Length: 268
Image (cartoon, rainbow, N blue to C red; front, side, top):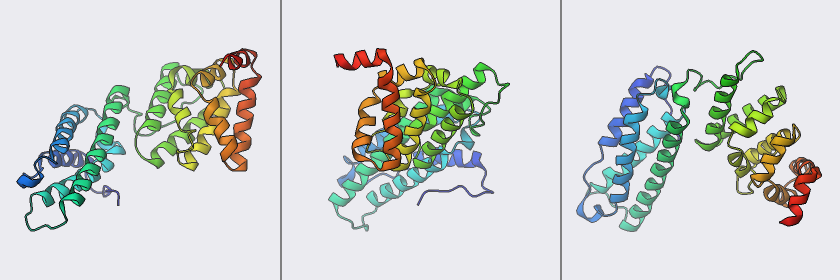
């Protein structure tokens, strides 16, 4: 079950708890010392990232913090089992658990590194993804787009779903934003959500977002094509249910109707 912060629990304290959990890894029994080496290496990386990211003014409010605490608590429990001679689970099962824990930490490290690179934690709007209004500056819109695509690359299903819904709303409300989305956003990340291995709800939203992009002008359509959307869209047409198949067909038709894209397809 995901770790949830209580309403009256100071989020600054939660940040401190995260750093404390990284430090409280027990010394394992000799039989598990080797198995814990990859885990300790990842914890060292995480400790360094937390030191850097905790200085960001909005980190304590970030939705990734509860997920990080949940992961660290599970890792701490596993490490305690490795240091407890009375705990009997079997070395192979424990090795499997430790491998999973290393995977959890790798995912958290990847998300934190992405957050740091994106710069979104240093903006006052980094937590509440408020859509720009007509009077918003180009810089505000660019930040919103960067923040939005960061959300598509990190966190869980709900995090990505909200990011896609915000993207669809932006493209629906202001078709002129599509060119900026195509230039400033990570369209390749959006295309990756068209994959048949992606969650059904994410794939459906991604098809909707891509359809809005390709119908908004030559530049967005060109970038969607160059990022490789055609292959995933054709697979959706072959294997998906009727509603999403119909929308994917419209996107493919829009892409291939462009004379330049049509010529390039003939050379592939």
